[in-house]
Amino acid sequence: MNPPRTIALRGGRIVDATGERSGDVLLEDGEIVQVGPDLSGDETLDASGAIVAPGFVDLHAHLRQPGKEEAETIESGSRAAALGGYTAVLAMPNTTPPIDTAAVVREVLELGRGSLVDVHTSGAITVGRAGEQLAPMAEMASLGVRVFTDDGTGVQDDRLMRRALEYASGLGVTLAQHCEVTSLSEGTCMHEGYWSSKLGLPGQPAEAEELMVMRDIALARMTGARIHFQHLSTAGSVAMVQGARSAGLQVTSEAAPHHFTLTDECCADYDPTFKVHPPLRTTEDVAAICSGLAEGWIDAIATDHAPHTPESKELPFDQAPPGMLGLEYALALAFTELVDGGHMSETEVIAAMSWKPAAIGGFESHGRPVSEGEPANLVVVDPSQRWRIDAGGGASRSRNVPYVGREVRGKVRHTIVGGRPVVINGEAQQ
Ligand code: DOR
Image 1: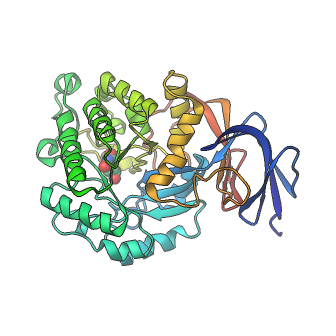
Image 2: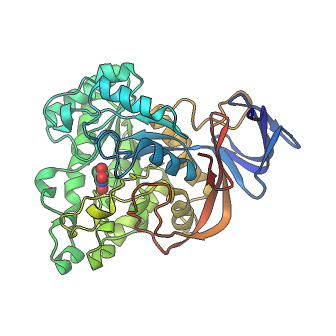
Image 3: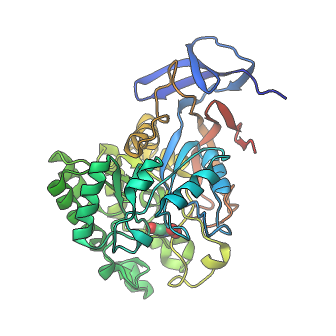
């Protein structure tokens, strides 16, 4: 059967970087060809009562390929992304082998080609993510890599980080940092505070993150380079980013849904589902992340989708790997916690999930306005649909969902990637 030539999204409220309006959207050959009232096409997708926006862009997804296919594949992670309203994702490089050479970049891009969403990859800053020697960033950049990070760990060596920033600046790419000083975090498994003392678990102080944020702001000032802070989790980090931005430095940042939703008290039953790096923090930190997002010091919501097999998450808390799923829950958690919590508008949440991360990651065909001639990478969200998160784990191969049982608002109805509906009425089309 031939695919429909034209698709009309009918009856929606359009939300993009240029503002809000109602209108139908007509798609043809991967592009938006018309926006206006009463449009019809060979196929119609119902957008009544829904928001039509540029698709979401996740700057932080662990897709686990190559090497950990039992936990996730690029195919299964992409399906989860599509169901979550994402049209593009940025894969993290802590795979086996790590994504630190042109050959592995090529492999990941090749694996991503048949996926439901656009798969971009980051490259490691250092060889083997070992923090000792710069990786061949120029070679990876020549294949289209725009973001480099050693995610899973931060670059510990000050001099090497300075060189990486200078090098990145010359290449016109962005360095993204997982801020964690390992001399303070080694051997720890949750936030250091009341709950770690009560539970008898080794705690990681907020300063493990904040010292690296502080150093990297100093290095960004020194080199004039851009830096992006990944998954910020503490009030102190948000305050420093605010200071750096106010001083005119090119600093951007992201926060993950779990850091504006959950606190360290969630670890009280020693359930490793709640183990994550950086760790769940205090109520005050959660409040600071919410206001950081509301005030725009934190630019983007990024999932840090980190699948782990059920067997590995059944290990004792201190031995289990850190990480939790996020791709299918981010939008609903943001609407429920941030919009209904009175911090942000729906449009601000969509900005933090779409055009703002697209700009940071250099995703040129995503996050674009919903207007004629633009690529048809779109999401249709039903903001009024309420649902309960279950233990299924959705499309992911893993099941480490920390939100089970939670009532949330906001559901992705359709996702369109390159003009192709990859999710229709909440169902993935593959
Ligand atoms: O919790 C985390 N899990 N934090 C990271 O930085 C890495 C990630 C993973 O790869 O599982």
